Amino acid sequence: MTWLLPLTLLFSLWGPLADAGSVNYGGACQVGNQKLEFGTYQFQSDCDSTSFCNSSSLCDHKGCRKDEYPFGYATGANLPPRCDTGFFCPDEGDQCLPVLAVGSPCQFDRDDECEGPPNFKDLADKTGYGLNVNGSVCLNNVCMWANATLGNNCTVENTGYTVYSSTNETVNIVSRDNCSPGLYCDSKAAVCMAMKDLAASCDADKECSSFNCLASGVCGVSADKPKHVATWVYVVVGICILGGIIATLIGMYFLHRGHRTAEREKRMQYWREQNAFRQNILQMQETARHSIMSLPQSGNHSPRSTVYSREGLASEESQLPMLAPQSKSSALRHQFSDDGFDGSEESIVIQRRDPGRF
Ligand SMILES: *[C@@H]1O[C@H](CO)[C@@H](O)[C@H](O)[C@H]1NC(C)=O
Ligand SMILES: *[C@@H]1O[C@H](CO)[C@@H](O)[C@H](O)[C@H]1NC(C)=O
Ligand SMILES: *[C@@H]1O[C@H](CO)[C@@H](O)[C@H](O)[C@H]1NC(C)=O
Ligand SMILES: *[C@@H]1O[C@H](CO)[C@@H](O)[C@H](O)[C@H]1NC(C)=O
Ligand SMILES: *[C@@H]1O[C@H](CO)[C@@H](O)[C@H](O)[C@H]1NC(C)=O
Image 1 (tube, rainbow, N blue to C red):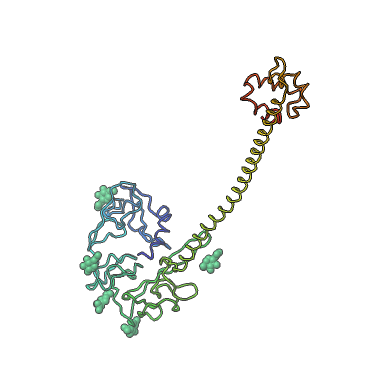
Image 2: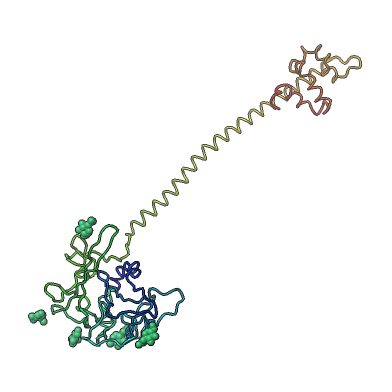
């Protein structure tokens, strides 16, 4: 019953909690209370979902199950067996019974209780919409074979299921019949008709081979058909992705190029500054050397003491315009006495020119 599955699932979510009986194993029950719940057509009895009401009117452990994963059992619990081929487990779940011959009474929507036709391979439903089971179908509680042919009389069973939404409650009518595969039973004429192709006008899902009659009144593609995207969409998406990557790369290139240019400009400026400094220093060194060379070599005054002593500085100031003013002379002298004259010439001059920088 694949096409009934969503409904079954929907109801099984909360249905059994409200509907399943509450009498546990060993408790008293009444077989007469068994019925199908209105709107959901779920089987209901006094006993809970793991037991059935036996002939002594007591709830007894179920003897079989019809679902692979039955409701109401704890994880790891011992499940009753499923029935072999040629047998079925009735709604009550008491025991496995042999399949029923054509014309026998069967339980609602239990095609699997009916014996298959000899040509079951041809008649079996291959659409996956649950039109029959192994070529047999239970309509109006009678076992039949789904063998009615085009233009011949057919039996139809319409069932209204109650469908709940968050705000509304509507009825979904499910129509089942005994027509052969590829045919449907027209409810008014009660004869089998061929299923309609895409875009043909329709009144119900069963009329369409896709089992999807759109609200616009035409057969649409099957509701579970996967969506296929045209090749050009893949191409366009691929181009967009590539374009995005390339655009990002180009954008990053220009952004970084701007930064690089600014950085290079800064370095160039620093280099020019340093170069100018160096030239300046060399020039001053040269000037100083010339000045020292031209000093008169009298008495026991060394050139050093003449240049860097306070007295010498005062007397020779006009000849050494680049040297430190009086206030800086002590620092100069300190540096000079620490490092010696020859090695510290440059640092002395730098300190003098720009004391705040170093
Ligand atoms: C009915 O179930 C009870 C357990 O609840 C069991 O003792 C009793 O034998 C069962 N009756 C029949 C006829 O199987
Ligand atoms: C289908 O029906 C045929 C004929 O009754 C039977 O032999 C076969 O075992 C059935 N197959 C299944 C899967 O029930
Ligand atoms: C079609 O199925 C019915 C039972 O539903 C059966 O009586 C009848 O013989 C079948 N017809 C053919 C041609 O198999
Ligand atoms: C269909 O059934 C009706 C009665 O319900 C009968 O009058 C009619 O002749 C049948 N048509 C065919 C093709 O068997
Ligand atoms: C409920 O659904 C039915 C059928 O779709 C619609 O006619 C009705 O207006 C809805 N009612 C509300 C309250 O939405």
